[in-house]
Amino acid sequence: MTELVVRNIDDRVVSALKVQAELHGISAEAEHRRILRDALLTPRRRPFREVTVSMPDVGEDADFERVRDNGRGDVFA
Image (tube, rainbow, N blue to C red; front, side, top):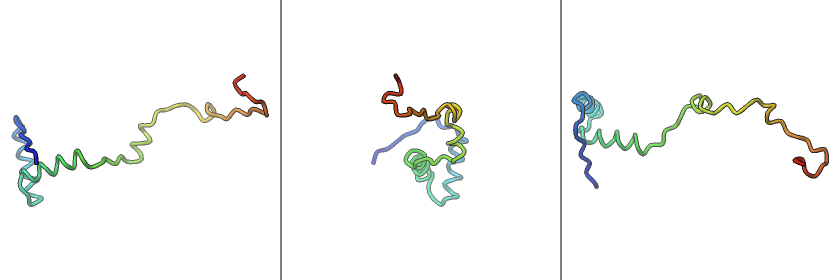
């Protein structure tokens, strides 16, 4: 496996990492690996509300009303 060295980490972050590792009963290094794996390799599932709110407003239903061609061959002519 590859090694990763992270420098210049805020002391508060290191302390929080150690506390979280202790709560999970693992080393700080193992907790760091778990956090990185979960953050980068676990697909994020967005809540339905977040998905719908992020959808662009593309117009009213009437803007997409179906055009009837009444048997004409080319509706764009």
